[in-house]
Image 1 (cartoon, rainbow, N blue to C red):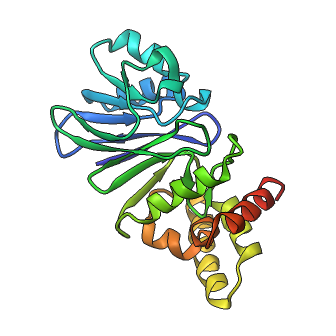
Image 2 (cartoon, rainbow, N blue to C red):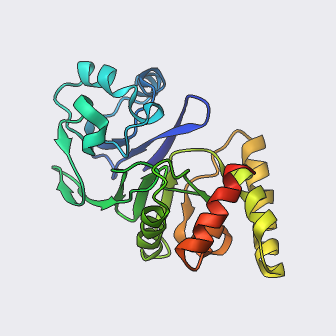
Image 3 (cartoon, helix red, strand yellow):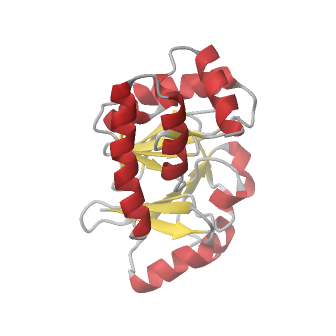
Length: 235
């Protein structure tokens, strides 16, 4: 079961669990939103996974840890004292889950993503039809991170951390090169508009679909990627 929990302005806290097992939680940017969810849907928590240090992803972790001190919190060193287990790349083995950790720097220097049962929790590295800002200015690192994600199976579920799909599709349409790309983007835009108007999430998406609509995954090299990202910064 995969549940996006809305929080702050446009963030998602992701909750994932197999059948009746305890859950994994990704990026607690605000504890009150998550606490409200748990009040309505009580579920044991097996682990917290943090992608990077920005406040809209970790500001609620300290409050969570005070109430659930026994739950391990995994994340890169940049997340600071809220992390109980520092990760970089490799595998995490919890009682019920095997979690692959992917180093995906670029948005921040130590950003990581987590792959669990074909669900990729990619924080602010990859969005539907977009990617995160490159605050590090290391465009090569961000390009490499996207290539790493691009190499995953096409049915991988992309569980990004923000509801940016509509604005990203508008940019994708502006830079689309072929009529086929524009038609594909337009179809996705229609679906996204309906979902947003219905107060429903546009995520997750699949990696296969992202390869068809996401200009940043379609960039052939770091130069093209950098030009696209700089255009998006001021779009």
